[in-house]
Length: 435
Image (cartoon, rainbow, N blue to C red; front, side, top):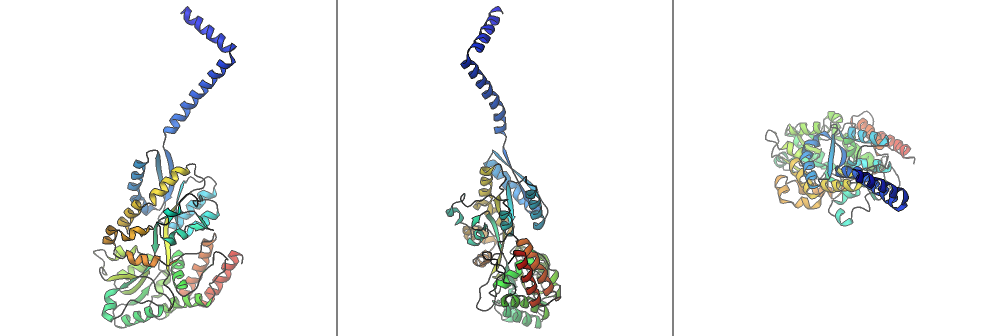
């Protein structure tokens, strides 16, 4: 005991008299304390949070489990949102506007890229993803993932509207699938005249984003344009745009399309077509599996082709789809990039295509035997994706779309003329853009 006390006394004396020993002692204590704090923190996994549309959640859960197994140091926190893309956009927007968004990853619709990038909410991926990797995706999807030349999104699935048609009714009438607007109207009237179907053509005419997506196909398929993102030039009051809207109104006036189309979204159009009482329908590929269910009246009677256009013009299918970006505020950009690469990779895209019928954004999957055995219309969809209609990549896109939707709906329902609608839409869009 006395020896221990003497040892402590000599150590204390030495500690007080030796600056070097005292300094080394303090550094050692500091290092040990730091390790005790840092090591437990480092053992905790990084958590990446993102918001997801409700219908996607069940399909993503097993993929998240797979990712976490491959990356034991990362956990994915998927927050289930509502079943409405506009509400998901609003929730993301509100979170970022608060300045401390909880999200590390952003799953976004193709039309959000410009708005989110312009606001500074997305990490610039331009120099992070090599061109060789981008070359594996469809060119239109990569183009739509850029804003002012910079890349902010990587697509994980794409979409392209198609013309669905009753091949049995066309065969009975001795008709080929239409290529032009006029051919569709004439084929519809011929089959309607033989009591083959009550209606000729259904599409999305309600005042919502779907009517703008539908119209861009008729507009560009007639040689027109909406907004030039480089110059902000507005083309809605040009003759090509007025003629495009005239076609839609004509389908109603001639009884080819029901007047109620001004209230139709995708599902209203699909249900009417699936009832067996309509010849043609403009819709997205998701409808294919539903039209061919065992209890569907039109099972085995439907085929698809690229959407119609004016004579001498090209078919233009509106580009849809979703992709992944990284929030500019994330504290874990390296881990977020790993998750982005996983969700946009070949394995996940093939899995989601097989389970849900979604169109992949990776070119190679359109030659995959397993996918083609289940969805033999994918080559037609790929052809449509060769000339995609990209909605204007401008920061004010949501407001510009609201303007167009309002006037399209008014003209389709007959409240104003197509010419008046397009001139008013052009005037308000120019005011919005300050041109």
